Image (cartoon, rainbow, N blue to C red; front, side):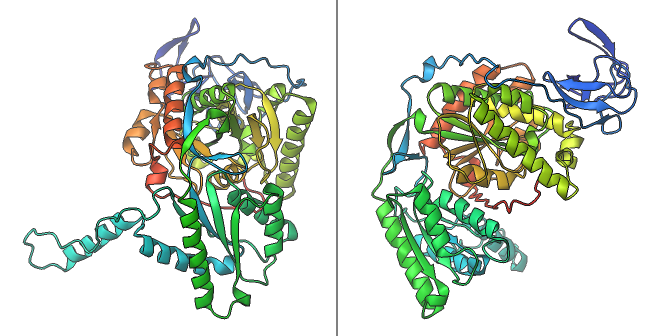
Length: 532
């Protein structure tokens, strides 16, 4: 197949690899067309892997669509470690550091945050009370500008004078930060903690422990109702496994044991303000790039993602790994069809077997409820050229670069080894980014072709547009434009160095990503049901 970079009319002749082809259909940009005639049952390949099977005859130059191609994969008997890797030239970055927050356990954060977390959904209202109280006390309201806009709109509707004068601004200018070395307080809410299975409660506690012990987190305030399934002792045990020396400050408050709601709120506020004061004593200091763990994610993908933004991010991962750092590639439903390529990159048989086992278990669980990985592509994916899950996966896997796979992690397991790890998560954008942060990613790079605002409460998220039209139209959520690759104006290697430089600026706190600027703090735990 070939990808149309611009809209191509039927009848136009194109020359690709010495093949002169007359297009049989109108081909929209981002969509694919055949380089040779395909008969029913013929295998369709892209990036060297099987991505579908023809369901009817397709002429040379014919468009690939859901009407003529179905999802199909092909697994080869590949030996772990059989794929060689030549690391990229990283001379430019040798000796480079970023300015981070050094934690007592040896990890380094790209941010310095205090967390406020409910153990159960019953405490979400109290979390919101604390959020509003702290925002008001610190003068740190992320929605100040929108509130001003709403007030001005309302004033304009009620103003009959029409004299053109603007109403007095009811909001004062932002006050100087009380705790200049702290990046803020993050208030998480969720819908779990009770009413589910023991495994649900355990998974939630493991995820929350990953956030509490995250390199970007100084400490946490935890609210519990008291009678819920996810008990305080469960969370304490999960935290102890990650922090056996109890180096993190974590304060627990139980509402059913408190004399009143006022007492609960007062004690929680005191915990937050004491925590902020302690966290403010930590300052950024230089750290080697080996202390960076880059989570990679895609969402709202299009037909250009696999040829621009995803391999660009893969180039950044390869460079970071070559410098001693780490990458984490997630979204197992979007690795369907490229398993054999990833197995060939696994450093040994044990790593490969863990990957196979987790993939097969996920697929069996989906099949048990009548679902399948082939259901993953969204209407937006299909509309913009990603016809099958295997086609989507072949491009999505490129975010992991070409380096060796050193480890495979199940959901909520912490990052353990430098290099590239695979993390079992669903393809759901927020569930997956939530998991990447929970496993220790201290920076996340997120590619998109259609546009998505996703962020994370504790880890900075950078958005990479696969095409320049998106980067221009949604510039308030996009951080980097991979479109010049599509136009042939820049190479992946050139832009990979630029993007890595931007990542280091964000990691050092010298540049805020758009998701940070918009206070996009998305947090959705995976209930381990069928989420594709």
